[in-house]
Image 1: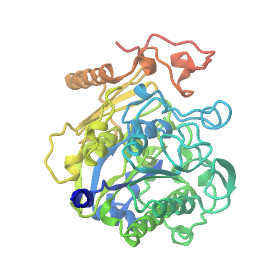
Image 2: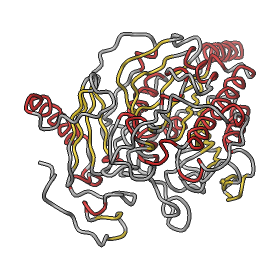
Image 3: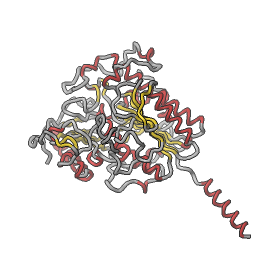
Image 4: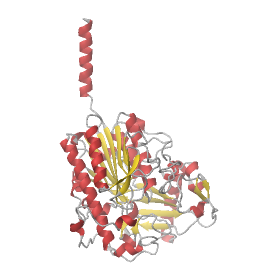
Length: 494
């Protein structure tokens, strides 16, 4: 009798386990310096991206997704923690060596809960293939058990580049975009029987430096060899260009950037094919997004907000692709006009996975969950996002953008509906003074609420990184004093 009862209990438990739905796998595909304007799904007709377009056709595309910073390390830190730079302390990109690799290396996110650490705590296997750029690069961080990455953040090219594999540094002769994809597929195959989180972080299309002088060697070389690429505007260089103003008419750079976008698209296609081949299509949430945008001639700029003086917060450098697809659960072919940010992804993902209670309570998350949008529900949403990059902070709504600088001028106000290129600064215009005052008040209220004193540069805080505007703050990093002293006076915040 006891044996029969035990058998019935075991059978019941096995039946219940079989009926309990397994949390979906998650694949987060992140690109590097990638403007949404480059993709067919966002209206581009020059650059071949059929697989990313297919991903968008099967899911939800956000037409107005923006990064909260201009450069790689802060935006990646914000994506993975859900925090602003003045909360996590990563204010600009990590330079070579330092925190990344060598005797002083450390993980800049070590004190925070992150997407990978939360998911591994919930039973997921986590794998990184691609660019980390957040410190402690030689060894797996944040719960990752599969770890293939780069020793540094910048990209000098896509062939014959240094990589870290098996916690060893070596040179990889093959095409890095394909290399990262190969490892992504290998991780999926190794973990197909359990929930997994793959962070596939491409170091392309990049669009900067020596990598754009490297000849095109992927399969798109002949396609773009004579392509005029009219989607990259030929505009008069803006006087604020600092690094790349002369690239606005450089066809080699334009074609290389386009070819690297298409190379990534090939990788996305291979990931989608692998999911279908392994029968994981309907149990895998795929997210595709950029870390931050890149101006490709738009409004007279090439590059990001660190390639200008003063530092900037223009839409072309913050507008990113953001696409979510989960076959069978998410409505297909949807386009959302909600104004969203990279810092909204963590709370959204956790709610979507049923892990909302695992969201960190401290520091307080500034982001909001748009999981309801992914499920086709109506949600109340305030179309406002915030931005900070060292001495620049901004608030953007559907209609307006206000940009303020500490210790520097000018401040800026743009009416985005009539001036999407942000060419007519309305700051201090008497007829728009009430709008500016309202936006400025909201900007200060946001940072008063969320900024952590330790990392709030505007109130005497420090940075985990060297900063471009060190002369305004009198700091270089928390560990080494600067030769500069703060320049208090014009532009000092209230």
